[in-house]
Structures are given as C-alpha cells and as structure tokens.
Length: 138
Image 1 (cartoon, rainbow, N blue to C red):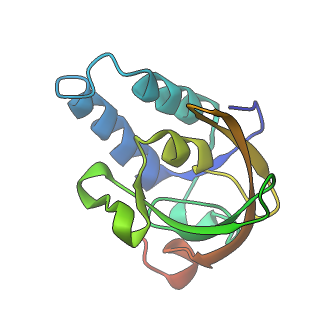
Image 2 (cartoon, one colour; image 1 turned 90 degrees about the vertical axis):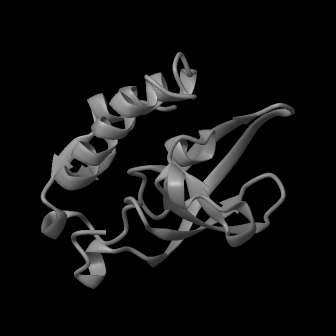
C-alpha cells in the first residue's frame, strides 16, 4: 500500500474496527490482511458520511477499475465479508484487493499483490457510492 492519504467515513471506520476485532477471534486470526486493513484505517482521514467526496471508494461502493498492464476494465463492489460474492463482483474488504481499494479516489493508482506479482489498478470511475446517493447507513 502507498502512503497516500485516503478518506473513510466515521461509520465505515467504526464498522471496520468492529470487523477487525471480530475477525481476530475467528478464521482470520493472524491474517496479514487484518493488519493491512488496520494500517489503512490508522492513516486514513476520517470524515462524516455527508462530507465524503463523491469520487472516493467507501464500503458498498461499486467501482470501475482499469488494469494498467492489460488495459481491461474490472467492475467491483466493495462489501463486508458476509456479502462477498465473486460471481457478482462483490469483493470483501478483507480480500487483498478490497483492502487495497478502500479510500482511494477516481484517477488514483494503487497496487495489488497477486501470486504472479503486482497488479497496478487505476480507479476509473465510481458507478455507485452510498454516501453520494444519501444512503448513509449502508
């Protein structure tokens, strides 16, 4: 992960802290992804849901990412683990790409570690962001 400032809503931050606490006593105990997520939360700028910029990936945001190496567009929705479904493009916040994309903005580039190396992805466009639609409780 880069050291770029990311933006997270107060509500998402609290829910993610609760998720980390719960996950530490379950199947994710000792997971490097929990530590990466905690690190992202620690460096994030926390804002009220009403104040989050509309071009930021928040929880339950549907986003188009551009793979900078293949030039292919990929559509994902960032969700909590219980809502993850790869066939629907719903990626868990605890998956490496989910943790990587949280808080980034349109035109930001981030890297995602995969077994074959690193993928470089650009946030191409936000297709749906709950806060921009007035859905502050999702």
